[in-house]
Image (cartoon, rainbow, N blue to C red):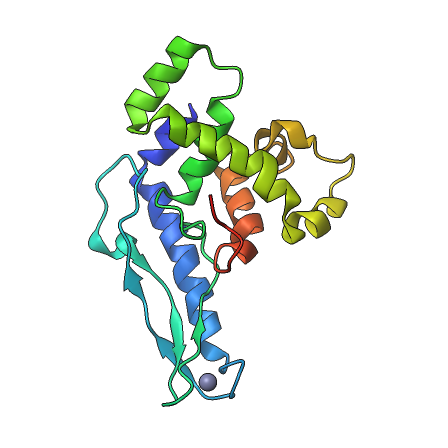
Amino acid sequence: MYATLLGDATFHDLLLDFDQDIANSARRERCLKCRSAVHSARYRRKPRGRLCRLSDEHDWRHSLCCARQGCRKRKMPPSLRFLGPKVHVAAMVVLIAIMREGATPSRMRRLTGAVGIDRRTVERWRRWWAECFTASPFWQIARAAFMPPVDQARMPATLLERFTGEVREQLIALLRFLAPITGGAGMQA
Ligand SMILES: [Zn+2]
């Protein structure tokens, strides 16, 4: 069952480790604008969609800021937990969109009840996958790597299926694949 992953603390810990590693290596690079050193400027978010208790550490979004006065350019490392400005964690935005596929109204009610989201949110995510994501410059380039082509009408299920392993590994691979677009603009809706 997909939803059990969202309640598995070791799964969320793993995503946090990935984010930490990504942030650490981004921190070793200099400011893109003025080549000065960068330092941590992480900030607290209020993520939803994790169905278990997690330490305070999980609420922080890694972020970097140029150390030089007068520049202070921010740099957002990619993340496997935060999908742009979305309040729900990335894993949930993927899994719930998959679970809604072909779900009967009553099954959908049970699902949204169990994870504490409403149907409008699920519908918004479906549209985001079908319209915003598939139209994004990132996907327009990345999709060429999949052969045969991914069926865009059944996103993100068809994309998840392209990664190997158990659901857990597939999901992590998919979140890593999405990471380049998690820090930037163009992730609205
Ligand atoms: Zn700078």
